[in-house]
Length: 206
Image (cartoon, rainbow, N blue to C red):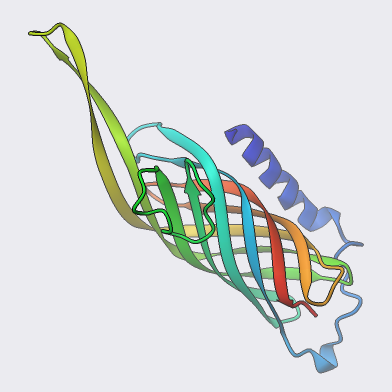
């Protein structure tokens, strides 16, 4: 799954340069630009590192919610929350924090560049965010008296600061709604993660 996710992220990155006709800035007028805003709600797959000290990895369902604003024709500000969990439908960070699933979430602010046109847009952003993870580790100990192994589980909850990144590729045939793909990730010293989501958006798109 990790290889597939990074392959999709590579395709999304390439699309920033390979779709000039799709995102040609032909209907935005510099003289009367008043700003655009929208909300993205996405669901997809993600992959994350469960421990900073070993190579343990986990994959699961990814969900995301973000608010986006264009202060100018080619800049984008995003406030986002993402979650990757090993089960369930997750849209809002920490929504399953009381459950028994392994999961990682972030709440981040990003700033980036956007190329917007008549039928859609592509964007790339990065920023700063807080990452919170909850997971269980297993330890097996041999009991010489019974001759059996005893497995114990230890619960962990950790938090750290990370560098989030995001690529958005959206088709926006309507002024108030669109559909597209979001490639997301967060690089940090404990629980780096990444994934891809199919997302719907609503707002003032132009």
